Length: 218
Image (cartoon, rainbow, N blue to C red; front, side, top):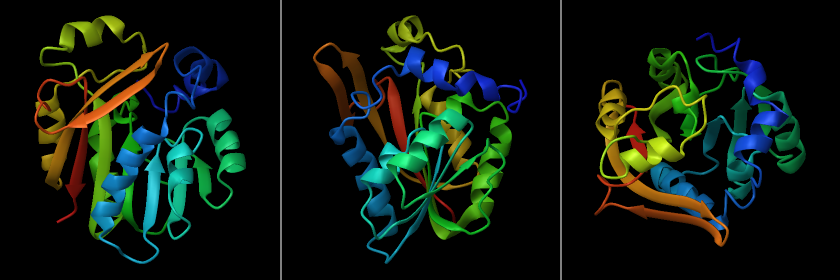
């Protein structure tokens, strides 16, 4: 599947169907966890540079403190138009992996619930590695389709653009082929009428419906 030909899939209709309440689906607790991973990876570095792949409306980038130098990219023109309005101190570009349109290197490259959509998955890690500064980190979150939650996740996941329905071992080995995996977490998450559950765990990480991985460029 050609990633450029899929561009029209991720416009306003897609967000209205799968993310009808974007703010409720990205609560402060969830963003805090992502932010904690990024802040730990840069270890207090002054003015760290971050690129978020598949940034959507830019809510995560907007949650970072002003010291960050922030860039975001997404295949969706609809999402990027909104992100530019919501996060004016970041730079944004409409682009799809493996193309990274920014020329500088980054201390952090993040991809939250994006990789499962990317057709040319084998080209992602070389592109990310090329744009990371020495010692930089790639942080990503993906749904996983193994373990005790697999039957439920496969039943509930109606997003036809999730073309990589892989196990956690697949993603850990995939990242480990180009990077050193510094750590990974399981994430329990669920959208209900009462709010969005988002609970990271190390203890039960082999049983969760999603994982977060922090990988370092050696």
